[in-house]
Amino acid sequence: MDLRLLLSSLIPSLQSVYVLVFYFVYLAVAGEILPGKVIRGVVLSDGSHLRYRCNGLLALTMLVTILGVSAKLGVLSPLVVADRGLELLSATFIFCVLVTLVLYITGRNSSDKSSSLKPHISGNLVEDWWFGIQLNPQFMSIDLKFFFVRAGMMGWLLINLSILAKSFQDGSLSQSMILYQIFCALYILDYFVHEEYMTSTWDIIAERLGFMLVFGDLLWIPFTFSIQGWWLLHNKVELTAPAIVANCFVFLIGYMVFRGANKQKHIFKKNPKTPIWGKPPVVVGGKLLASGYWGIARHCNYLGDLMLALSFSLPCGISSPVPYFYPIYLLILLIWRERRDEERCAEKYKEIWAEYLRLVPYRILPYVY
Ligand code: NDP
Image (cartoon, rainbow, N blue to C red; front, side):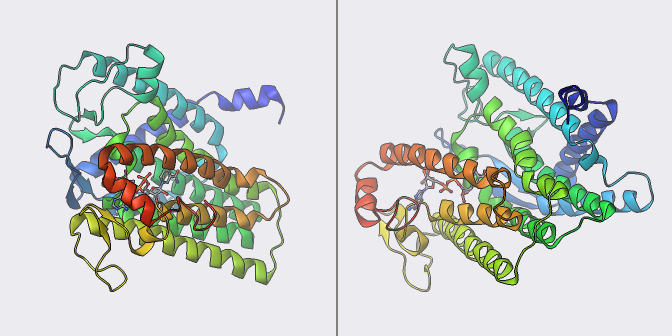
């Protein structure tokens, strides 16, 4: 693609703006009116907590059904995303900049004293815009952080489905594409089945809402995690039967470790006496779980996530590094994040954390790191 063509396909058309507006309005309305389990968020430093309605799975199922029926009736092309990927990307980028400027201004002007809305102002414009000013800003009673991450995860699936439709239309549907699509769809559906676990993750409890998080949720997740799918539209890969089996194996083990570790921590936080792998949990200082996956490495959940990320790229073979963008990025992100999380935990738990480090010496990969 020459540069002029690339630049012109980055200019958002009105149709891509409509697609985004429809998407956000749908998510806002569905999130508010559809039934779902209401989860109490973690207790904030002022003793308060937020509530999250976890109806993402229902909202996603309804959205995919609406889009499927519209495609069948010829009202909407299922290729709309695959054909307009670049303009949707730039429209999303512009939206991220605008919304974070509004967040910056409203955050600066807030005089709220609660933990979720209290402004954290460093005085450096770029830093405050990038990292955000408030922990959990809201718009018309919608928790924006929870909303954006939901939009990003659903967007990833919608992009993939459009890529799948495009490969059907092109006649280029391959085993690699099917494997990639199945693994990602299972991962995203699993995310929404366990949406309540999101309420206790680092992003929700510790990160303020600024450009970094909004961009990460709305643009980075859907558009870069789907690079493998875009790549497979233009590249053919022949997979052997053992390669497919090995690929499924990496996915399944990754899933078991990722989901198992996150579930064990979630259950432990709710009731520290719940047995782990059929035995009473090993607990440090009454607060930290040191058995199950959390006794193997201090962030086994990151290990599982990395294996899953690898399994999404393996269907593309090893002829190009491009489809490995996601696992490589995730490796860097999770190593960095693990270090930041350890610092936070060392400060919060003090000698209890030191004891946990003694009991569980590995960070992510047992005997290696
Ligand atoms: P964790 O879910 O690992 O949460 C870390 C927090 O858990 C700590 O701050 C501490 O919080 C608590 N904790 C740590 N160790 C223990 C223990 N032994 N016992 C009890 N509590 C403990 O981290 P994240 O929120 O970063 O990640 C959640 C999931 O999201 C992971 O699976 C990760 O892989 C995934 N993820 C995926 C990304 C992607 O781009 N695909 C990006 C980021 C994350 P507290 O103060 O509450 O005790």
